[in-house]
Image (cartoon, rainbow over all chains, first blue to last red; front, side, top):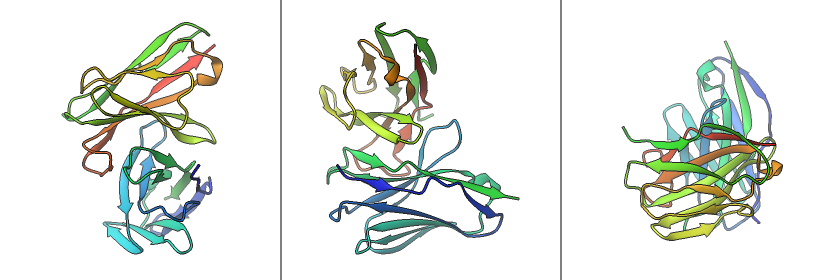
Length: 112
Length: 115
């Protein structure tokens, strides 16, 4: 069983700061990684995916992957109160992506 | 509007009373899946379907059944619900198995309480 670990938080940052969310995974063979955002009482929403080592940027979001250390991070620049949500890391259990294993999520609180 | 709908959104039932949670998508997606979300345990996959009449178990299939007779519908069936199936359930669909921001959609969730 592949495992995906996240600190449950809450991670509190002031508005305008960089929020750094981390995820570690157990399967060294994992190739793909996904970040979801889930607002309280709402459904998850895919915001980032990353497949190769290094950084991938999309607007204020940057995903960082380090396969040697088996961690993937999500950086949120210029954090806004509207970024307050739970962020879930997900890793496919197989190469076909049919099965996704999710971490328990990190709750982010951005204070004005 | 592209969407995944689930019904009911909220349900309180009693142990052993069969129930069905419906999931329907209007995007002609081939891949659909069911998840349950519990505090401290995160999202766990129950079943998934690659296409009509093709279904397979996820991480936690015990106590659940699914069917995929039409491409748009993927109902979740609890034949004999038990209190440990009290949870928040999400249905998801995507164009292919690899999720992307543009092609993966989650339903609004169904909150189930089994007494």
